[in-house]
Length: 149
Image (cartoon, rainbow, N blue to C red; front, side):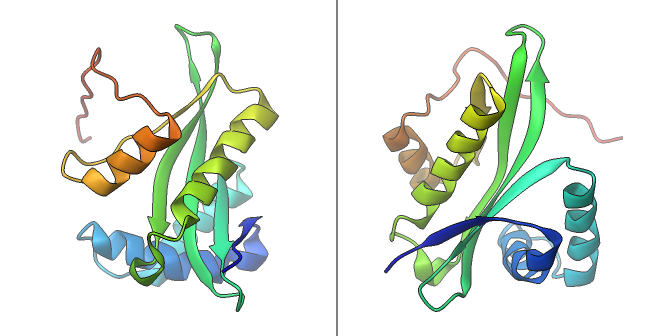
């Protein structure tokens, strides 16, 4: 099976929304394609994110990665935050996740970013295994905190 990775434009928004809705349901959020379409369209229109979609041989969307552009004050450089990665459950273990991550790494190189950062759930062992296999190193120096506003 050949996988084609494409950078998402507004023309492919419906393909992205279908996958994003599955992703949100996976994370126990309600199915809400209209809400997600609005959110994703804003990110793309405002150049706040770069999104890649993986397509299978039949041209069906089978996965995506959503990358935010950020900065590191300490490192004095750009950072690509691979915030969301999803592959349809029936398409996993076929190299699609790895291909999407490669697209994120290539994006980082193209824009001169110093690194790609990502996070995953502590119990998402398959994702952790993939990230470490690719060469990502788990941070043991910093804790992550958040506060809802």
